[in-house]
Image 1 (cartoon, rainbow, N blue to C red):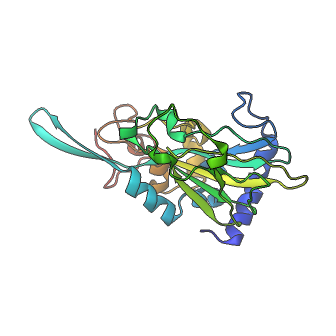
Image 2 (spheres, helix red, strand yellow):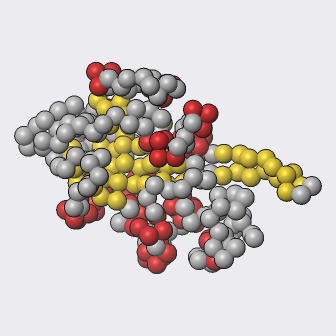
Image 3 (tube, one colour):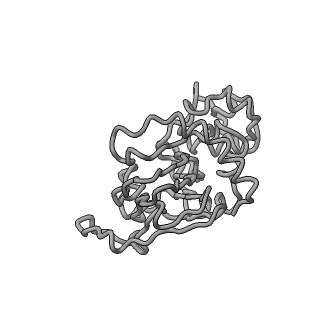
Length: 259
């Protein structure tokens, strides 16, 4: 999906963020895993990683929501487009243990009738294979509705990738970061997670990438909306009863919601 030059730049841009990570105290990520978050505030290369046309086309196709409702006597149709839920680089160092199998949709208390509410894109920054901790997935598990079903690691297969490749999966697919059983290989990937626009974002993009940083990076209106600064129609996300695109950035275009 990406050029070698693009991936090399992303690796360079993420290096200091990986080095600064103090680890996950919750235990969800193994202690040997280093993370880098807030891609939209790091560099243009990281922004462009998350705005690849194929990535966005898939998200818009699967996660755009249309709601028709009455407001007084007027029948209104609102369209809510997907937004970034979180972005993160994952460096799994030698000795890293496998994560527990899980569904990302669980963050949203999603029911089967809601699935999927999120999409995951795992992009390889270096060669990613079974032994150095490639993400493992259980094919077909996005169709399972019985939460009492036992999860068997034996059912999972590694999503092995060459640099510049990506694994794309719906959020109700059972998956996990694999174990790194090598002596001297890191597994480095970038994760882009996009959710329905009317759900809360897993990573607080407004604190990770505040308006002044958006301006410094000269983000386009499309990038600002993808980050979550726009309104999820009819009125989710306003500031002072105005669309943040207008009240914060002074942008009034065809997609600005006037309130």
